[in-house]
Image (tube, rainbow, N blue to C red; front, side):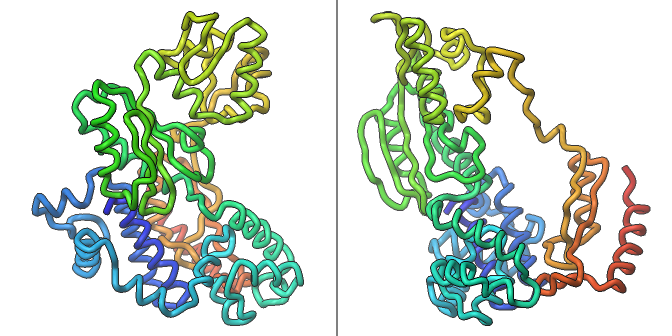
Length: 404
């Protein structure tokens, strides 16, 4: 199993434990382990093979190290199967609804007997959810919004989950002799919040060797299609991945084409046609002559455009900007100076105030704001006025200890 898959298992265990109403410290242990594993560059399988102790990892003790070993050797975790057996399978789909969370999902299950997305939709439309203590009309509206998105995107995963899969997959492909280039494309490259499938492009001396290596990736559940320059697989994480090996002279054109979006590419084709050109995944052509295609910059330049960052390629305003006042400068992680919305273990967060403060300092933040729930949100353990005062004292003490 890949690091991403093991992290996903621990996240699911934490969700089900929270749904069950288990000890909060136990829940946080699994969530912390999932974060540690998800951020780890080296595959855990290599740790075990080299004889390194998994307990060297932050937050990984005897119990969790044994569970990781079980996952690596069997691909399953008995604890997860036991937790799944406690609830109808359809109930687990509630955990996919953004804005709901395991605690609230458990309340809906126990108070309204909601066992599926369809049950939840009916309850929201009948305004029964807002009648529950700690919910209200606004919460019901937010749940309904997240529910509709979940029903539309049932096969999509969050970007950060896709990111770990892409890292694992591209690192795995990098070991193929003669691989010259390997880049992700699609909605992942455009930085969309959710990703429905993975598109990987490669250039190599031996395309078929790359194809066969791709099909043997440890995270593959089954091979859907195989060929000499294109293969498709279904991953254990539940989504499909496509690999295309293209000629180096067409790599930039293919990267642009398969990054999308469809709307962006439609505009590009129209611009090419106006200039007497043709653009596709093989390059930009004037008649039979390829005039660009090796890199994306050349593809856009052939159409009189600057290179457009993938995050802007949605067929909206990027062309007006590119041909007018200029493209906006995108925000990077280095630009983030602080965080003004943070929940801690005082309510429904997964880390203490001190842990949050130290993590913020490590990231170079200048400020953070602790914004735990008030007592109105009883389902999340909202703070009473007395607890708020105690939390302020704790925040002041920690702020004095952690400078910078």
